[in-house]
Length: 95
Image 1: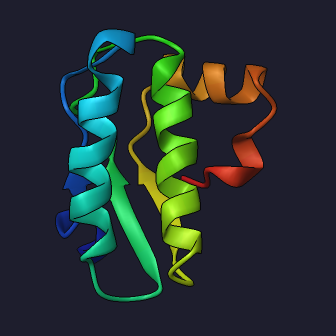
Image 2: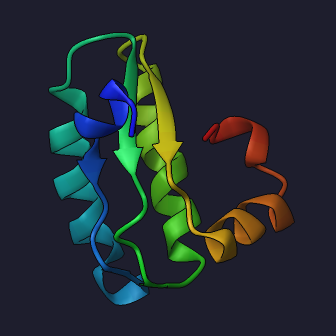
């Protein structure tokens, strides 16, 4: 595990439409307070999710871009990577 991954903000175990707004708010608050030009989000804990997870990641990316920062998603589950690729946004959410 790299130094950046040890300082990464963990995603929740579940991220579906029913809790997406709350998860977005919590993660955004945590991520925008992180120092440095690249903020790392650890997706490894994420086990149960739907397409809302992609939307949340894109919203987090946009929030960080307004601060001149970039989002790196570490340890993205294979199924989530497949959704990101399916929606054509893989280049926007680097691992």
